[in-house]
Image 1 (cartoon, rainbow, N blue to C red):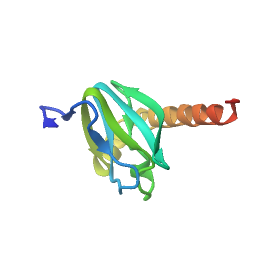
Image 2: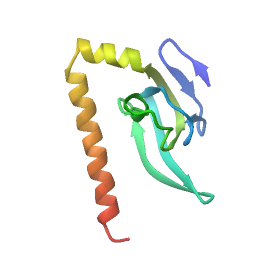
Image 3: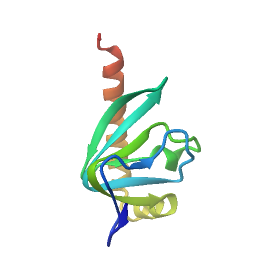
Image 4: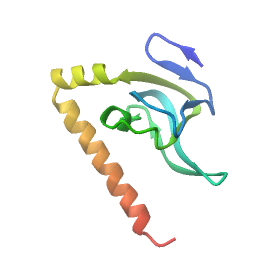
Length: 120
């Protein structure tokens, strides 16, 4: 992993956040892709892939729970870390940012529900 002008570059397979760890920040994918996985009973289940411009870890900003999934680089990925204070300041400057966060979260909830109700 190496720090760049903006963000940090994670090599393929590097864990960015680990399920069960405390979280106090979120991340924005600046380049490349990351995969979101859940580990249970020694097996991994991929929830999805987040590409450039996408974000993850936002639940840690709004809740005081531990990380709900592990996120790791899928190929080399440059990722910017954003702490709660910075995010809230940006939302105050640009309220549309909050709307975009809610829109993305809503889409993720809809997709998760669809996956639960589809026959396997």
